Image (cartoon, rainbow, N blue to C red; front, side):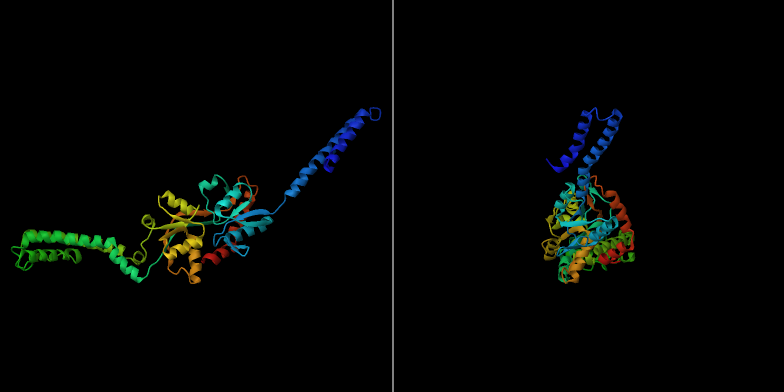
Length: 389
């Protein structure tokens, strides 16, 4: 029998002995003694629970997933924006903690199962994740973005000749010129020797096409150049129509041959269906692409993901804009990924937060400390350190 059990039994034995000795104790004394004995018993029963509570005091278990620049691991030394924020929160709350590195799914599972007290990364708040874990207040807001590889001058020239919009524009110009020229031919070819000077029919048809081109490029020929009333009426009507035609064709050409369009075939979400797209596995980026019906190749390492884009294995990468910009900027400072860039197009807002088990006892105090640190100058200084002004 254990020592703790023996101690708890002593008052019971003594109390039993006293009640058996009726001749030794007055009834009132017995009652008072019984109350005291019960109080002592209660104290002895609480000793193990107090001991357990003291033994339960331990460092907070932090599950971290690498996501630059929010969580980084350099030879066992963790750093980054999320780590900086958590460290300041821990100092404010007087908490000791230990960090262990996990993958994304493993981190979420460890928090959900109570094996970790908090999960730290660039973790977006989503409805699906809310079903298994709780979240702190948001501490950073970003959006999904698209990274592409910009091509050189020769590729841009090649793009001109393979651009479908170019052939659409050429088709419109030739078609409209042929229509107008055909009408003029019917109205004028027999009597207007100035516009139709060729002797054979084929030559006059060519002249008709040529006479229709000015309506597309520079506006109609002066109305008095025509000999018939129909020709002059058509010229007056097209004087207005040609202005709209020229403006429309100019806009179409401009959209087809902007610098970004020539250097990359991708300008937004609408282009992802026809190219090879990559994303990080089990992330909001991969989920978003799946919801949009877009196929994607998933990776478990962001450096491998960007390397595939740089090597041409992928045409585009969809990920959190803040993370993409940081990684590409950092790599270019080291002389890598010089052709990669993030498109000026964002979508699907992302809010980062800490992961917590459901009904975590730390959530309220953690949120208060988090808001306190976020409003401090040191947090703004840290943001500038990683992302600039």
